[in-house]
Image (tube, rainbow, N blue to C red; front, side, top):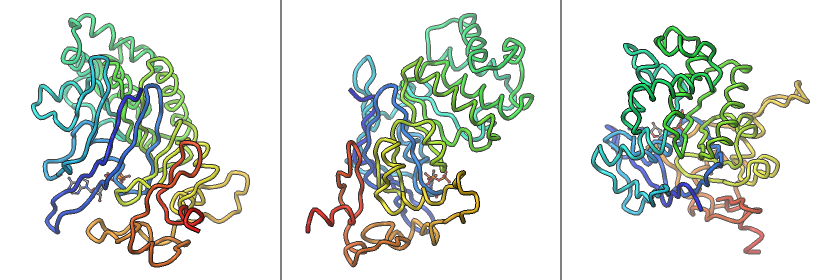
Length: 331
Ligand SMILES: Nc1ncnc2c1ncn2[C@@H]1O[C@H](COP(=O)(O)OP(=O)(O)OP(=O)(O)O)[C@@H](O)[C@H]1O
């Protein structure tokens, strides 16, 4: 049974220059206890897809009528798209779903102590009284490895180091025991050793709380360490998904192959880094056919420019939306 099912998610934004498509017909599922890495270059639609799960996108956004997001809770399925009133949204925002961001300062109000914010959140999303909420908050700070948690509880976010703030944000996000944690580039701003600690911590917490995690990152290396499965996005479209080892060892979409080739190779430090040529096009000028065709080195003809590639099964639970993968089938 899945924790969340996303079907045909399409999101457009009205801008001064015109309407842009930020997410285009995206579908995926996540099971409890599963970690999915969502990767792609800047502007590929990772964050807006994740925010859609909490209906957190800006007011200039329009979802297509057939966009469906179903969250399966113990109390029954929740049709996220149909939630309108703030009190209905409370089920998902900070309740069943929590989100952590790249910059933890954005999650903490500057004029409140970290502890009082944690307590406030628990009072909204649980039946605890203030004393219980304080006890749990201090316990969570301790659990994420913050020493002297009861003193830190009374500090402001700016009094903490970057790594500690990140941990405090994770503690706050987890204290309500969300079913789904969305982590948007949570380790990008950290130095590598702290990054590794935070990744280990998140893995432990998944095991313990059996929650699902969507981990958004540019970094396929981080995905390889953390995720069970990976979904690759480009210009609003999901172009490849599958078990993380399978996709990294046997990427089938030229874009995924490009992302992997661009990773530094520790066993051959002299090897030149191979960036994917060209830039991601403006969403105002989305290419026709396969959205990647303007940068693809393996284009197979006009079909790439004129027709959207359908999904092809390219391995166990591995799917790729590329015309190349249909070539054998039609031959
Ligand atoms: N409120 C908005 N109004 C107009 N366009 C928006 C809005 N929010 C996001 N976009 C656009 O949607 C597209 C996808 O953005 P998104 O932030 O999801 O990309 P991303 O893959 O998460 O990138 P990054 O890795 O840089 O965070 C971008 O072109 C962005 O400019």
